[in-house]
Length: 264
Image (cartoon, rainbow, N blue to C red; front, side):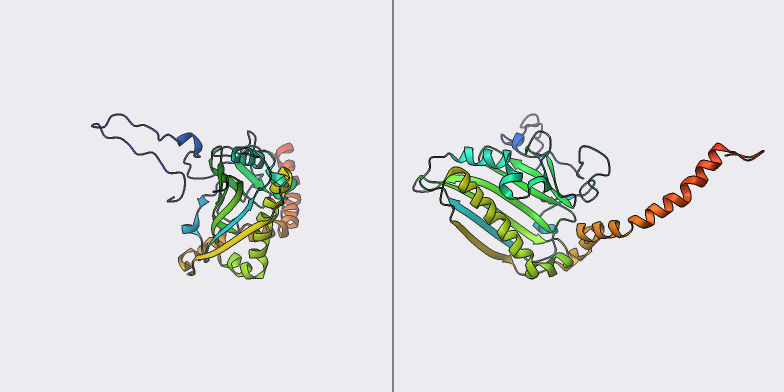
């Protein structure tokens, strides 16, 4: 995966033993596939999937930046990011639909989104943290939340996305409302950050199409589409129930009453 956690380089015998970069603790450890702690099968659209960045997506590539200047209040960037980490479900508006992982939003943590998909914490330090998406998520890419002091000394809270629609179905949905939903989600999030600290909460939004081309070689991503797979799972639920009813009793009967001279 070209866009997963960068791996520290191996040192040669000349330069000495292998060492990790200074910020290694802030990055998620490399893993080929996502593992979700807890009950097996509880997150079928995340468990076993790969993390994907903009190069693995299908649609046009977008960079979206949302920020708010927390003028008139005294708050450090570190405090802003810490508040976002600790209260992300509430501040983002996802509520119980965003399942915080045990241990919080630390590098490598997996957060689930309403049972449909999820995100993986790729990077986290005191002044920023970054989510990366799994296969099947509406977007293929990164979203980074950060805070910094501007030239006037005021603290700014920011969310920045670099994304593509993951497959042709999601790309069709972009102009039909998916763009607006994404914009409103993060504008609302930053508005709540400002309200939490008592600032006015004016949101600045900047959207740039970084690459207008669609990557047709990635159209096969549709096989992981979380919406499609979840819908198929829901539709097939009665069929699975009927199959269990049809096969279960007969197997139990053979187990309890083996035929003469034969095996159960």
